[in-house]
Amino acid sequence: MDESSQIRGASLGEIALVFLRLGTIAFGGPAAHLAMMEEEFVQRRRWITHAEFLDRLAAANLIPGPSSTEVAIFVGQLKRGWRGLIVAGSCFIIPAALMVSAIAWVYVRWGALPKAEGVLYAIKPAVVAIVIQALGKLGRTGLRTALLAVIALLAVGLNLWGVSPVLVLVFAGLISPAAQGMRHRLLAGGATGLAKMFAGVVAATAVAANLPVGLGRLFLSFLKVGAVVFGSGYVLLAFLRTEFVEHLHWLTEKQLIDAVAVGQFTPGPLFTTATFIGYVVAGWIGAVVATVGIFLPGFVLVAASGPLIPRLRRSAAAAAGLDGVVAGSLALMAVVAWQLGKASLVDWTTLAVFGASLIALLWLRVSSVWVVAGAAVLGWFLR
Image 1: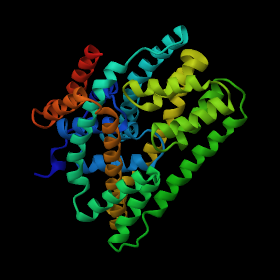
Image 2 (image 1 turned 180 degrees about the vertical axis):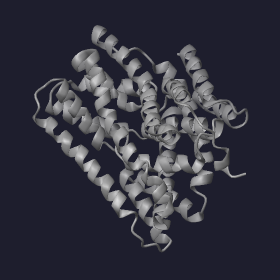
Image 3 (image 1 turned 120 degrees about the horizontal axis):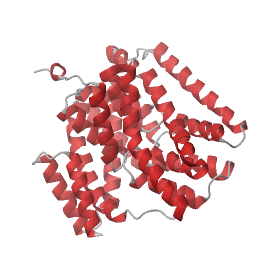
């Protein structure tokens, strides 16, 4: 039976509840978030097909902002239009933002972060297993030809060689249609329109440099960061350091490192680092302003690019380019899994957690939610 014929509908209430739950338990960074979303929306709920998920993943990797959050927004847009877009993205962000705000309150009041090493110690090996499971499922759809498999291997090599993720994806998107001998224009009008819109967002946020210190300046500073940051949390760290430590002098180096640490050990998007900084600078209202500022460009860019994806699929050359970007995205996901594995599988205990998680996911068909929860409880008692 055709996969698309089994797709189920979803109400706004269902979308809200599912994304609130995911935002509460989605530890481990974007690769883990995407693995959980694939399991939840493709496998369990059948809200979207593998192909739709992969196309949205490719698009999210090509626009600035947090890729996993943008995939969440894409899913909401697919199911319920602009209302679903807002509900899905907001509900994925809100749990982490609330947790980070509470931690920031503790930090400002007592000057220290709560200890979370034990929980992370056991969660990280489980996350590696979840990402490997997702790669196996997505690879069957995203790497369905020998050419796409070769492109993925080349993308892995380029990324490990030090080429930036954005350039890797551009390479993958160009080589696929070129290898197939296609020379058509890739919906130049639509792509040009999206590029103009993105340039407008960046130009509008540039006025932040001349505004006085205050909530308006805080909002526009984070709006600018959200509109231009590609890549990992380390790229985000570089932008935040330039803006808030070197230029504005609102944070110390230690405060910035602590902010990024909070984003790492809380569930949901790493970009909630902005929530922590906003609270440190301007209290609860600052946390809200900073959160809205850094995530708003993602909502705008998804809303603008979402309608283009079906049109790209109708063009043979554009579809080939999108297939290449999908292969490149899976390659980057594999590199993240490898790097996370090297950092997480450090002793016999973590290897045991990893093995038990793989067994639970692949053979016992246990939900990734329970795998993460079980690992967290185990880590708490072990450490």
